[in-house]
Amino acid sequence: MSASAPVRPEHTDEEVAVTAMSAGPVSAGAAPAGPPESASALPPPENSGAALFAARPSLIRAMNEQLLLEHIRQRGPCSRAELARVSGLSKPTVSLALDNVERAGLVRIAGQRTGVPGRSARLYEIRPDAGLVLGLDIGHEYVRGAIADLSGEIRVRRSLRAHATSVRGRVAELTGLADVLCADVGVSRPAITQTVIGSPGVYDPRRNAMKLTGGLRGWDRPAALAGLREAFGPALVMENDVDAAALAERALGHGREVDHFAFVHIGTGIGMGLVLGGQLLRGAHGVAGEIAFLPLSGGAGADEQEARKRGTLEAAASASGWCGPPAAAACAARCPPGASSRPPPPVTRGRWPWWRRRRS
Image (cartoon, rainbow, N blue to C red; front, side, top):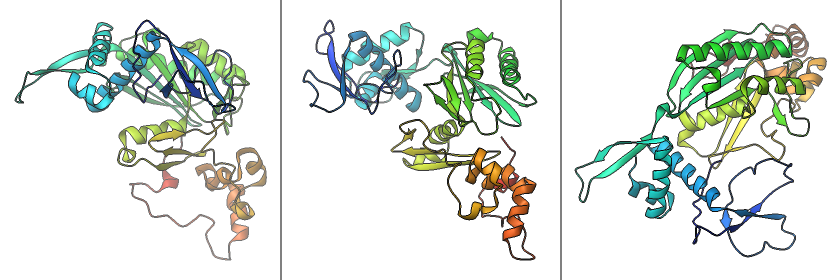
């Protein structure tokens, strides 16, 4: 859970009524998409679609602790006064939260700030060894993985050629890659704090399975997700691979300098991650950015069968679309005599033109 605004109860032994606005129904047992944004004892407006639920002091403390951890992670070593200023929390609330996360082993004292007027302030930083995060990526031709500590430093990274053609085989490849990465770091797979898998498609809660998985045959069956959860535990997080790349661009790339951008990925498939106001836009059903089925005039050289299965844009504009004989033949039929069926090279900033990049 992430917190975007501090919540301070006046009395720690009382419950606080929190109004949460929801765009749609929440399935039983599912957590809310985000933290409560306002605390109020007033009832919601009539016919507003708002839901009331009680926020206990333990929940509020956890939200404030998460807020402070996120500020420390983003800003580096911080003093209590700095955290109170940037978070909007009172100094006693910050002190209580820091004491809790320090006892939990999530932060440590990084030193003291000197050379400024007043008393020297203790600086707090994230303990890198407090947990490890395993990230895996599923592609048509490669499976990739990395393990990072809580400070974001990559401890180990590997990429292996994908040979599996079945759901069970893909799960086995991911499990094997995870075991190799864990062995390189010197930990067992159960010792990993959190596992996140980037995959084509989006999660469908009604079927408890992935959907819109492109050319990964059988990956949209419930058995695929069931096999992954059996291997990596029920806390496994499945994330759309392009959305994950957009979040990485926001945190570490050019997206750090802007609040609104579109990240378009062109590989064996094609997809887009959209960030607005610094937040990833997922859409009402989680399919925002799934642009594979955007219509193109005349099919733009895409094979009709592939276009129905994968989407017109993906069949025509992805790496496999340009390289496939049906697409090349269809494009040649539409081009004037003597013209090449391959599109002209675009202007690129990188070292490689986009169609020569290694496929995912």
